[in-house]
Image 1 (cartoon, rainbow, N blue to C red):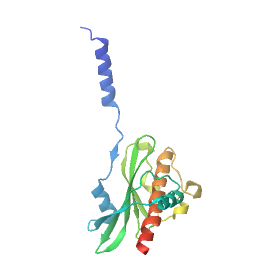
Image 2 (image 1 turned 90 degrees about the horizontal axis):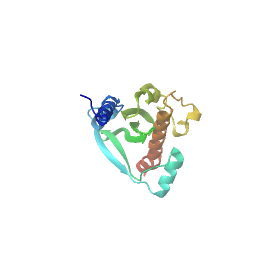
Image 3 (image 1 turned 180 degrees about the horizontal axis):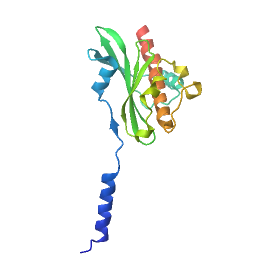
Image 4 (image 1 turned 90 degrees about the vertical axis):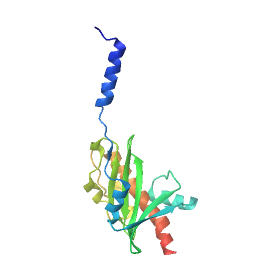
Amino acid sequence: MEMPKNRWLVIILLLLVVVTPSFAKIFYSKNEAMVLAFGEDAQIENLSLFPDDQQMATIQKDAKVKLDSGMFTFYVGKQKDKILGYAAIETITVRTKPETLMIVLTPAGDLRNVYTLAFHEPPEYQPPERWFEQLNGKPLAELDFSKGIQGVSGATLSTRAAVNSVRKVIALYLTMVKNQSNN
């Protein structure tokens, strides 16, 4: 018995869908990420920020990126009313799919760590965790590929997206949080 051509086409399409690899990888949930950033015993508070037009312009100028939202959230890690640091969760499209990073700052606003929470591009496009270490402690002005940040061959778009996210978070901190805590 011979199968009609349409049926073969349907079978082939189904096989392609089933066999097509899925690259989406989620490494940490939000709760796991907060423990990673601040430890088991920390209390986490949300700090919602709504920059005005002047603050938006300052952040965009300092970060060298366009902001796509007028609302941002920092997670403030505290232990017995002492600030342990600040974290922001940033999702940005790399090529065609998103990556989600958690950017952790010290209480003084210096970059402490960057963690990949989710990465939906092929794994070879993901910068290794050790690549992020070169960013730690660098001031905003030095977070630039022309100022010594090393790229990763095969992950150019991912590393650029990561640096842009870090720059944005630090610029937000400097404009909104640091000034707010000094008042």
